[in-house]
Length: 113
Image 1 (cartoon, one colour):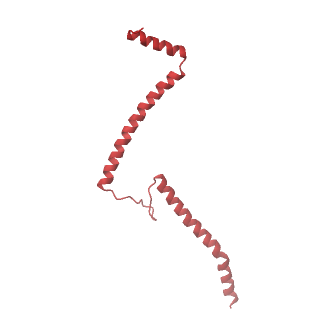
Image 2: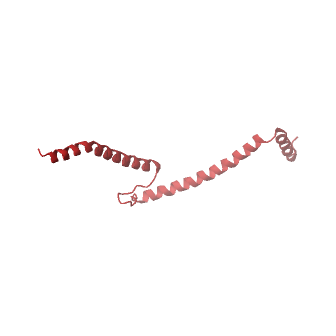
C-alpha cells in the first residue's frame, strides 16, 4: 500500500470519532432547541428562518375568541380578588384599637347598639 494513502487513511480514522461526536451533539442540540420552543410556546421556524404558522381555520378562530373572553373574565375576577385581599391585609395589619373603633362607628351609624 502506498505510504501516502496509509497516512490519509490513518488521519481519517483518527478524526472520524471527533466528527461523529460533533454531529451527534449538533443533532441533539437541534432536537433540544425545538423541544424547548414547543414547550414554552415559541413559534417554530424552518431552515431558512421563516416562521411555520399553523393553518387557521374557523374552529381555531372560535377557540381563540373563547379563550380571549375567558381571559378577560379571569382578569376581572383577579382584580376583584386583589381588592378584597388588600382590604383583608389592611384589616390584619391595622392596630386592633383602630379596628374596634371603626367597627363601633359602623354599628353606631346603623342604629344598632
